[in-house]
Length: 389
Image 1: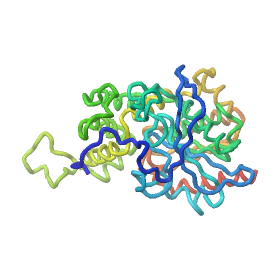
Image 2: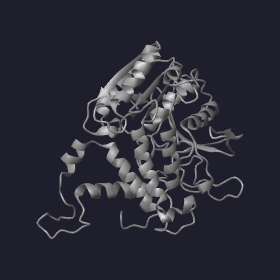
Image 3: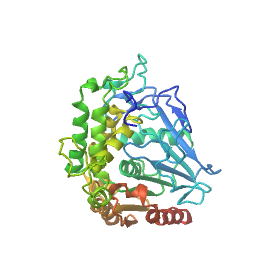
């Protein structure tokens, strides 16, 4: 794959195969936290299962940073990757699509069908690029509310998501407390910490320093002439935070790549196997993602603080009044499990029922996508318990 041409952007564009996407075109502008409005917004979404007659069996899935609406399904036909939560959603699985109507939308600011920096500006039809405004997690949720209205879903049976998806989950329950009957925030936080912001800042700097980023206006660049190196490095930095030291050591050790050994002549740019792994993930991302969307969404995560404008964490979290299951991961270095226990403690102190489950895994932050053997049972039981009242 590394030898193939690198696109200036991996964004989906109108005219590309839609795959299983559906599209909602907003009939009025949406106001953003930054004090500006966006007009002619589009939200791409996918659904699984059937909505019942009472419209009460709907579950919303909220995706993470580089995810999209394709939570379930094969790659191809407009989808550059297979579904990000395969094995968790489907007939007879934890989120049983024989029973539940499941919805997942690409977030505002994304690059796989929803309005974002790569989308055509309604004034001149050229990509927004540097003109796209900063958005917040709350802005993303407001856009999802429009989708819920369009689907005639007055309240979700449950809103579920991990990482950045968990941030959206919390904002749903705080900003629109009557539109979710339960929530499941996974491997997430109530407010971004300084270290989490620091990781994001390094990635943003990598993109900004790429001369081919061109201040965000690179969409007419030829293949290999876009900011693929900056985006690749940003992804490599993030990938280190998604896994644990034990996993890297067990899988790669100190082995050199390409058959080299430490007995060969030493060269400055000889790669270790772990470097080849990071190169691979960086190269994968540039083919399905957009550098500007990476910046916009990462900034939204760094701005995330449910207490902002609400008097702090305690009064903000006290607005959540629905049963909650929060899930942490023992080896998560990006969103350590103490942050999910903090969510639990804040909710319990406010009298809101909340259970906490911890995934015991060496896989780090990505365990909520990997260790479905530990996640599926408590998730399925929780969803069913809400249905039973």
